[in-house]
Length: 315
Image (cartoon, rainbow, N blue to C red; front, side):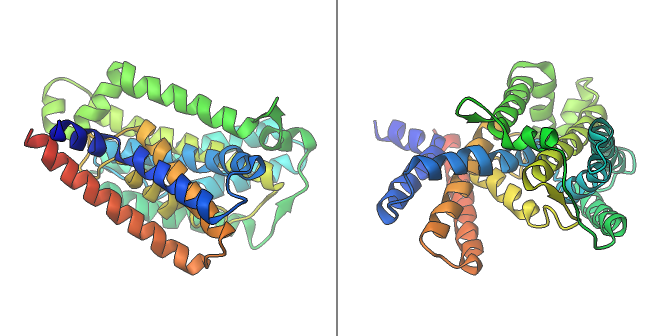
């Protein structure tokens, strides 16, 4: 009985952490459980982090990482904004998608063909792409987009925001692909043992390449939604996103060792992140201290994951 309870605690540790956080924050702030606050967190803040964190999760599942997602988001959204501000919405969206996919494809080629480590390849691309975003914008700000374009992010279907609908649709597609298709099984197999997976006849290079292209597309989508909500675009957009999505992925329980975790766990990690941030803001916690709090939660999640894996192995 004791073993079953401990096993359940480790298995659902992220859900337990989320519930505890919700209880604590509801006791420390009267505003926390109000509909306005909860709906703002879930429908306006969570979608952005969820979309890009899913991309990070895909990379980490294959023992990789993508540090260029945030800069890709910035460049693709800035180029899109250049066209959208003049009313060329379709052209702007197309430009963002193409740039996002292209940056992802370059990452994929560097990793699968040039055999660079994912950290080195994507870190280098992050600097290159962010530099291109700075160069393209030259310190300017694009704003004043059409109401139709902005409604993509600011509109809703009944009480449900468009942002939440779009993020959950993308979540559903990726969840199905990972859990119900041969492609998804290949992703997990690569994370567990890429050499054995290659010997089994799976095109590991193609799968890894596709993951970084998907990351690029997710970055572009997030960027478009972000500028639609802000009604403005600048080169510094997303500069703090990289650590946030890594934190959400790790807190959710996806392991750097690869082959373990998934976007459903990342969803819990994202919820933990946004609710902690919201609760600290409501309680007047300094932004400088918030990073330390997130760091503590990452450490706690990693420790739980490590001991949970050892415990499961000994059962």
